[in-house]
Image 1 (cartoon, rainbow, N blue to C red):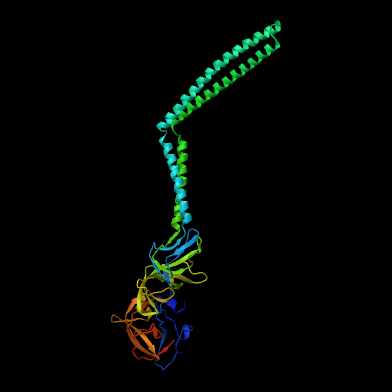
Image 2: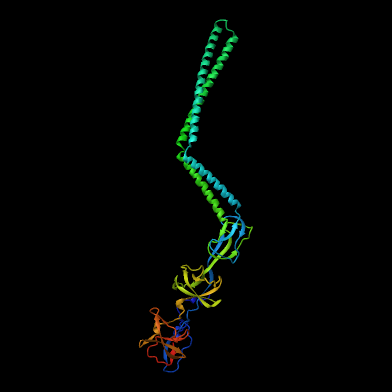
Length: 440
């Protein structure tokens, strides 16, 4: 931005041109003496009007880079560069065969877990109770049979013991019992003993089966524990979350426009692989545009967000656009004493394009005003005058002013004064029209 354009909205600055004593302040002529009667005056030169405007480039109000959340092969592209899209319009479709299978698997897992939880919460069915009771009765029956077998084995063992003892005594005391008879009695004793021990073990096993069947019946009647229910509920939640992720991946395979706009860039072709975070499209919204300005530090304090402005574009010379200041940065640009300022302009007609150069004018600056020192004003008969000096001749010019501060006033347009002219400072009320003066 050039120096001239940075002067927008800066009230007209007076370039001092004091002759002689005010050297270096822009004196436009040497002090001249036209005769002994010349009146000495100090003069200044009026500054240039500050109506050149600030220059900036037009940018889209909104630009969005469209990316994919998942990787996948591009199945189809629905838009081309230059297409106008609405929010929600499909831009691109990724292949979904694998994603659909993942969703079906996740749905099946959730269905199975929910069914198991429901069955557990409902408790045992009548058939299950009947089966458990039947198992108890069968175990009790087996236990009774085992007890009877123990009694029989015990009786056989007792008989075999008695026979063995008798044979042993007879063998030891006489020769009526042979060694073969004793060995046969011993073998029968050992068999009876083993059979009795086995019967006792079978009885114990049958008793354990009765206890287990009765415990299972009690559990069937009581139902599942709270911890079991909580574990099954947690499993349902875990599988439901997996299903949600699968559905999200399937949904993300369809890439849509996040807002209204125009597709200005497409970076992928059908059949290529889309990668997460890599821009596929660029969409801009040009219903509004922004003009980015850089404003000098001596001007930034006079700008406020919400201030209305007029915008002119050299490419559209016959039209003035209305806008407003939407952002005034409190922080200067890096390595510069200028501050970023943004102006928003309505562009529903579509006449403004990104990259165009625009001139921005504050509405109050359109009616140009000059600034003069309050000490240059002569008040007489409720009117105000200044002394304009041309060719060492004084001309009395009536003006209309409005206050700026205690030292300066604005001179309204149409007063006959112009930038670059000389006026007297502290002229005194005795100066007459056409009087010859010498500048100091």
